[in-house]
Length: 216
Image 1 (cartoon, rainbow, N blue to C red):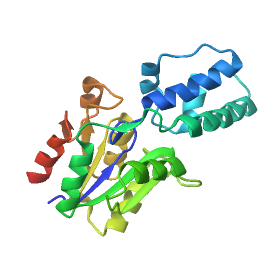
Image 2: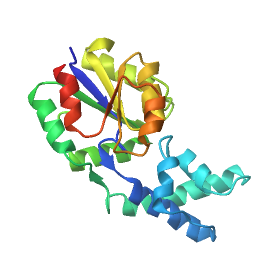
Image 3: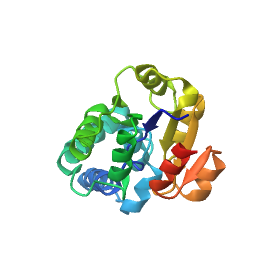
Image 4: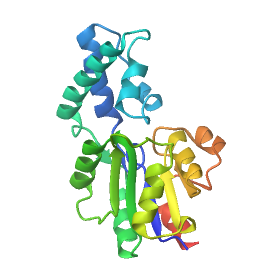
């Protein structure tokens, strides 16, 4: 019986790609580099801001140049991160129903921890998450299972009682590494065939499908 769910954030609960892409493009424009269509950032996100900047910037730069670009990105993202970002359709209703059923809910993201917390508090203030974790200093990022296992302990549940839900290879691998059943969502940043190739236990096309899994 499923008693707890760990969600990814970007591409799973909320659509953040436009604000992320706009922020990176602003950095690239500052340097006079070529910018990308916002849709291109779907293939760059998922491993944290530092990796995102390295993927977007020209290769072969010095470490201090990437660090400077990352600082610029943070400056812009701090201005833009709630411009277009919104929950995906029916996510609020799903979380409300899971809350009503008494399931324990948590978030495990590679987005910087402060932004993860701000976004959850802004969009889902009435959902009593057991834990909301983004990237934290000296804690390995996904797909390392460290944070997922930490959350399971905080929930007081066994692994077989927890689902791991996300939209990317990073998320499915995190769930597998933690020994959890995994759910791939097709509305995020990865396409259906890519997700299917990762062998999640379930693939869902809409938020309501997650309730069906809980009911089984």
